[in-house]
Image 1 (tube, protein in one colour):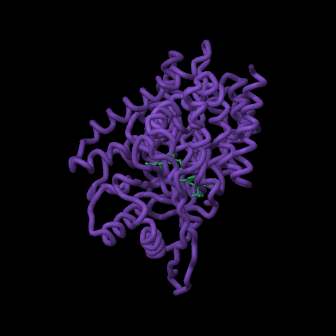
Image 2 (image 1 turned 135 degrees about the horizontal axis):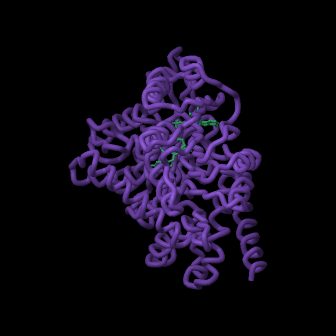
Image 3 (image 1 turned 180 degrees about the vertical axis):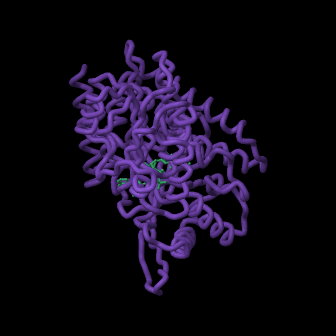
Length: 448
Ligand code: NDP
Ligand code: 2IT
């Protein structure tokens, strides 16, 4: 039986690689899912005969366009823009926009594919999509970023809409960029509608959306620990990243009495053995969101260590990768395990390499995958869409209550499909629970 599953996995992946040559991140994301879904599907012929997983790995459509803009010196710059509309079986396409020089088709296809499962897990009517550009916001003036966003939306606006496709932020796209993008959409269409989420409160944003991904990661971790009769208070934590997800993950951990030791950016990490306080975190937010500086300045300002590389060599009980894909590799995880790390929750999308996941599994370290752990962001985006549709605003407490409930329901779905004796394979649980809902809808629609 085992070898039949292995054969069908290899056949499936060979086809995927042939159809999508060189798209390594996309192959990686699909393999992580297929390894759980193919055996599940094999026992349920209604899925297998309809080739649901094959259909899910072929996006509904991919839009690629030129983004032309003028820099402050008057030079004409050309970037490439993308929107991957992966699957709208259970709701309008939904997912972030990433501005980073590494952006390419493979990265956006992996993100859109993952998003489809994640959005399904939230229990909300959200399909999966992702977009972005190879534009690098680092070192650009606010005016340059504005002109780029306006040009990007000038093409994108014809492909999106509140019932069609609703983008949001991701790496390099925060509330400033969402403001520019929304403003341009409104100007071009003459419509004020919920076409983007992550908007500021003054123009249709939701309370807690800014905090939701990081807070959600911590709520999910809280559920994981509670199941083992443990709690966050007093736990030592390592976090990578210093952006939206990392800082709000740190904020909620601090509030819960955990000790946050690290933050990082692409230049290196700071290690604050005293623990990062809320006051220091406010300073980091100002550094990153206003002055757009480097995390090294924290070490200079507060007098602690800065080192190049990743923070995973700092001994910790809990680890939260919150920067980018494949930032936690096998040697990193071996160090974490040796240092007694008990659990990892992924704030970033696909931060852990396949080899690293295997090490975590063998060491029985609890591992909450991105689809489950960082779904709080898109969940509150879904709540922002609901509020926009009926033109109301819920208060902070109401949205936070919804977020906590959704994260706890995601946890329970992972346990339902991932329980393996004492150990929970959260990855398997998230994959199967996310797949089922989308697959049921696809079956209902017939072949398309
Ligand atoms: P931000 O742009 O706010 O922050 C990104 C952080 O990660 C920065 O500190 C950045 O450092 C660091 N980083 C980015 N790329 C690299 C790299 N190649 N190597 C090392 N460090 C890197 O993004 P977010 O916090 O929004 O996103 C972080 C992760 O969370 C991403 O994987 C994203 O897909 C995921 N995510 C985000 C959600 C959201 O709501 N924003 C929702 C769910 C997931 P530097 O400034 O030096 O580039
Ligand atoms: O990866 C993600 O879930 C996001 N970047 C957030 C997507 C959203 O639509 O809020």
